[in-house]
Length: 449
Image (cartoon, rainbow, N blue to C red):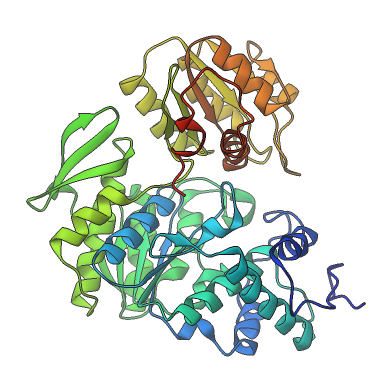
């Protein structure tokens, strides 16, 4: 058995792995963030060994701090509904790894994942690389190979972290999109929004269009200066043309450039994300990618984002949201104030490297009961540590027990703080492990797939 320098990953018999062996291989690479290595040259070397699969399909990259996952899914749904075979790559996954790699709304099958992943792993073994690709790089390479095999017309790629050195940035996109930039991953990207914006600006390309969501003043200046230096063609979201219309049970309709749309996702903030995706589709049409109005409207309504203000119907209602930074949690808090009534219960778990004191400062005033819990991650914040920041909360390390305690109170219940926590709760619901007095349809029917 041999290993690649810097890891202890066995590299024998990887050419015919099954799905469970692929997952075990990834687990041995370590935590996705703790082991992250920013830099493109080693990853480009791997793509070269794989015969450059990322060059066999045109792409759009979506960077930013908040909203990039929703914009990616909106745009993917729009272009697919317009008749293009459209790939979508997102991260992290909530319940299953296959969620990250989607073509026309359908996640990659376990068999297809194993086939593509095995080829990547075998290539890594044969290439005798100095350092083993990271978890994220290995999954990104698998996605690129799958998209090439499926001969997709367009791939929409959500940037994992930053932009300049993220593995998704190995492509040469036809269009770059940058959603609102805020503070997150400061240890890797910088301590100010301007420093972080410079990293996000790494997805810009010379003489290539970039579409910007509304940004903080300093961020917009940094992005504009970098675009001017490269000769990138800047488009700002046409915010005056974006107008909310009506709301039904937390889902909004809106008008954009004289056309009406209805959202399938919850939350007023999704109007802006949908507007960005619609305007991106207009730019793509000018670049030769066919679209039509009916498909755009259908795509906006069909788009879903697992674990983002996701509602599990019943009494009491349960909302799940993986947002973990100031801006994302501000959107959650605004939604709860507008569309729910007290009493409310919060089941909360978060990574210890997040600014959980700020997050709790925004959320805690809205809840009568707070349960601090844990989940499976090397980076999880201990419930007792969270309680130190909010003494009236109760530490309940088992997330299912915390959820049960919240439901017993008969209040609107919110599970928040991490996609890892949301994923564990959704998996338990799907497997029938959450015992509550609810219709059976809420076990599986509310999940996108």
